[in-house]
Length: 299
Image 1 (cartoon, rainbow, N blue to C red):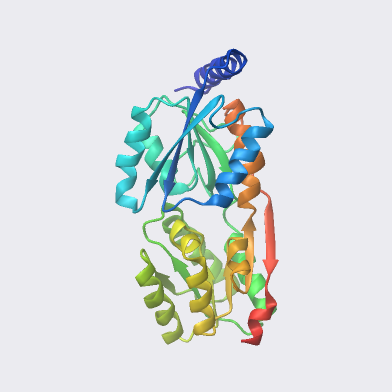
Image 2 (cartoon, rainbow, N blue to C red):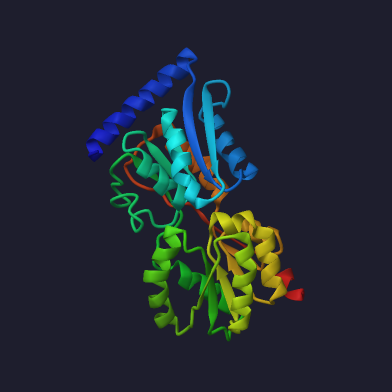
């Protein structure tokens, strides 16, 4: 779909939404989730929608589908599309890719994708194109360098830093292939990769990092690591690895430090605004936030 056609279609959808709200007709929003439900993000989204006059159960019906594993995403996406919702919401790269593969006509808004251009979701940030738009969580290329810079403020001699990644995450594969080699050369550090796709593999990944005698570890953001944030932080402490994480919830669960987007803000303010308008003129960037928990060092 060309950009002009997309804008015309979404403008018509917006008029329809406003008219139906005035008439008391309920509209339908489909939400695809990889893993379990997050009350924090759910509440942020509901509050943001409420600020724009949309209330679940009154003038809005929200259909959730939860895929407990990545191989279930296509089926869950197809179930949502079959309901013919007015709009679809994806919370991460995997769900965004699944929804884009499932429909080329229903508008899609994604919330937490680091590099939507790099993984092929949109044409570019200023003109996304197609039936999909959303929020980029940061501009790619320098993020890992910043994480290393923060870690080196805590461990100045760090020269070997492990990276915990999920090979099933398209963003992780992209960063590993393109950004990490450049970062390693530029900063003169070794960045060995340890992988995990299940909770059981998290233990193996951290043990592998410790066996390689790394000085610290970077934990990439992923539904797996967010779901098991407490376990991940505990494993870092167990192996005495200074760690930097993407979300605040890790620091809240005794992780050393987090640096990354304010995901609740993404859902509350920006996703709700994007859903309200369904426009695709450009992709905003989620606000960055950091949170230290230096008491971890006393372990």
